[in-house]
Length: 155
Image (cartoon, rainbow, N blue to C red; front, side, top):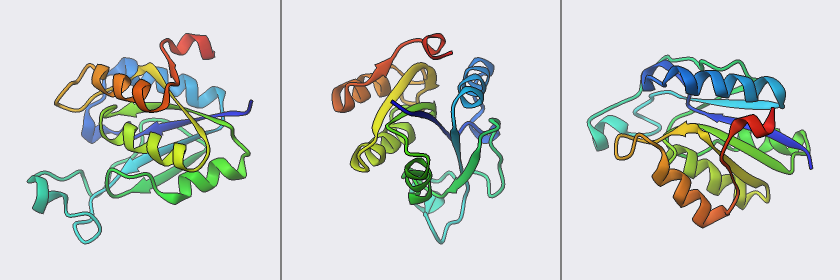
């Protein structure tokens, strides 16, 4: 089974904990990797109008990945799926920010594309609703079933 890593929105504006950055870096260095970076463009996704908050217009990934792909909302850009298909990936190991929103949205897109989305539970944090990430991991387990609890199993 060919595996790759998707790092979702590990960037300065979300103030990720250092342990998340380090674990994500380790995984991205071991496998083919894509990192997403959310940027703000109100014409594409009206964050401020709808939420009264917006990500930075310019922000960069804290993770060196084989591919960095910009996104402008919760969803996963089609470029991410296309890259995994080019690499002939079967399973995508997912880590990142907002396990209960952006990470979960990525899981649905990967699933719908016929890939096997697998969350690495100790490499995610949740939104402000549940910063621990437990809610997102529980939702992931319910919808996709594929959870790896410890990133060290993959190194």
